[in-house]
Length: 249
Image: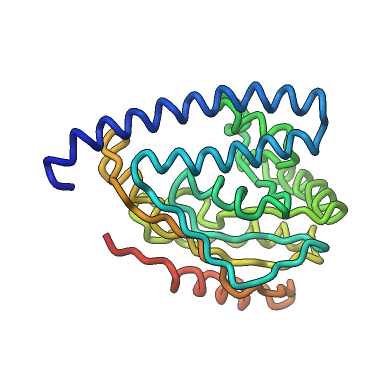
């Protein structure tokens, strides 16, 4: 980043974080009201607005969001969205653009507390919180979660890397989480998504966010998985996502 842009970046980054904090606090309260007064449907609408507002907040630093989806995805069957993971903003992007698919999340237990709005949605919005150190309990939760997803034709977002990539280069995909989901949601369609650019938000540190970057979500050809051929299909899935991730600086 040129030196003359650094003061501007600092000011806009600070404003971005200030508004993001306000968004989380406001939508935490709105979610509580919606869930306790209007139930699931009202709460879902508030979460959709949370995701959309979070993306709009990126415009403060001049960031552009681009969504590429040439496929008409079904609404009458569950979908498992599988994506590479670069930043926190990967999640509201998928949640907003696929809001008609009722996207839920497989999340680690620690994220269920301490984060305004986000933790509340994970606990009350139909997602599942698992303890990775207790695989037996995790499998039981995924079994119940899978039945819930199948029954309602909802969708799931999973990041097989398990953690975010700080340089945009995808980490090795882990198979167990996706395999467990497919086992318990056997009628699910697998939809790969390649995410590009969101890692750059923090490449200069939290207070020097780059200006004018583009973050994109590209939907790749949907796949029908068969557990008997899981290993080969999982390799194909990982490769198709990796091939579409642009790691240029």
